[in-house]
Image (tube, rainbow, N blue to C red; front, side, top):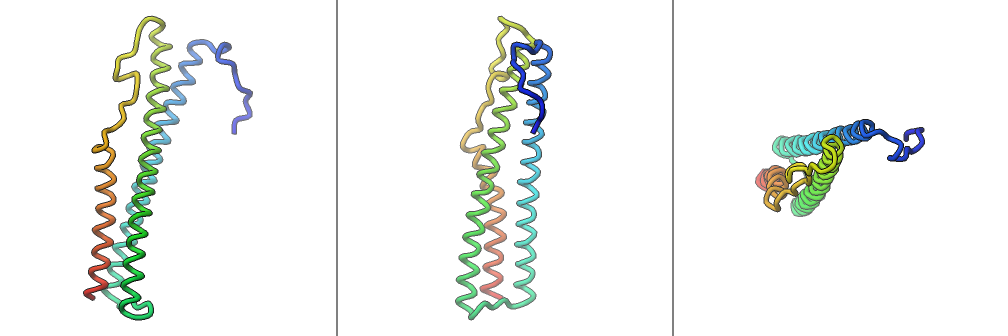
Length: 161
């Protein structure tokens, strides 16, 4: 946490206020990119583990207390893993949307100060346009689809192997 005392906005010059909004804008964009980085590293990590699981099941028979018990446990585990991954992805995507909304707000405030009174922002500068349901869903379907395909491959290999 910062040890600086809060500053009354009235005490800041317009230039200082612009600089503050630009710093907030940059921080929010940085947070967005770091969140995306975590999203992809987490997904690729999970997919790598699933690929390793497929290889392990192909090379060595896995038995956890009988054929049916093993398949039931594996199937239930795959379902849980799929839903956890989709939930995690949904939360990550919501965080990214929030970051975009904030950085658009900060950019708009800085632009208002730079342009001065009486000069309105363009519609594309004023408010972040939320993605459509299709745009939001397609990435979840794509990433969740890769997870589902790997989980199905794991199940097929364990049942047929």
